[in-house]
Length: 153
Image (tube, rainbow, N blue to C red; front, side, top):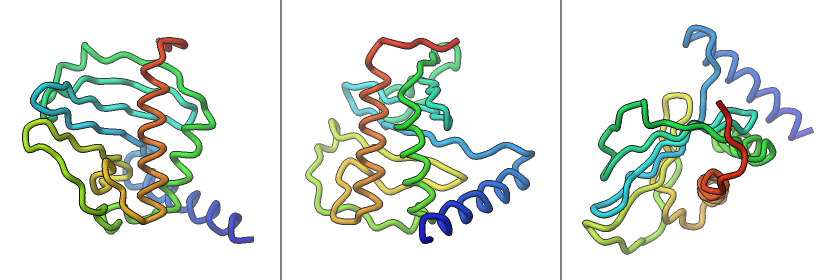
């Protein structure tokens, strides 16, 4: 019964968001900020598992859209990400993770943007189950994207 209530709430929230945004359902975006010596990226993940990669440069600097590519990740992985996002509800109110030692120049952040909200840094999710689930999803989607298997045009 609880699963049905969550599913109905998710459908209602998505419909409300779409009504406010020209009929478009929200798209989840995994964002790695990059660091001094590593390039960041944005992965736009649709519900079917199609992922559009756009390099974000070092420390999140935007790159031309011409550099974006698309691939397919397992649809079950995309569905799990969306279920975890909808379960977490207000992403901005999720707790910051526990103490996380990062270098000022080599550290990066990992977040998920969805429905006009952004998670706290998922690199160190702490003890919160929603943060842990979203961190797992974001890392697995990034890893699945890196496997050069199914290219989507």
